[in-house]
View (cartoon, rainbow over the protein chains, first blue to last red):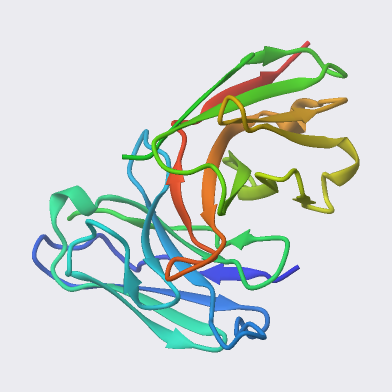
Length: 112
Length: 121
């Protein structure tokens, strides 16, 4: 199985400040079709996960443009340009390049 | 607007069979795979398996021997059965839709609300 590893933020984030979340996979996520099936999901308290970003850097429908994704191969980043109160929650990376689908352990975003 | 509505028994005894169903409202039933994922405080999010509209399945090898995923296209529903449950199967179970083609291929775009299943004697 591909292991997805996420680190925790060093401290809560001040409103309006940026946040950066990292994710690393145990092997390359480049699929044989040339795509990299790395997604980012947001889970607000008491809610199911919600798709934010697909294929590394594409925002899903209705996702604010303060969210952006980047990376390649095995190293990926989700950035929130200016954190808002509604961004509080846990963020997960997920790979769907290879079965079984696997998720990172989550990174909690809290407001200072 | 696509909605996934799930239901099933929330309290089981060890060795019983977990049974959950998920109904899909809005959008086509074909052209996607229909997934089950569970979440525990200890292991986080764990993919259980998927089924497409024609009944082809993939399962997580860690659970495969205990899992049955089925589909009823006439009702736009799919179901999960997990047999011989133990306390380790206590989790919130989610159904979710995976795009299998197009721009959003291999992303889990829509999720059910989740069902807490507790296994306790």
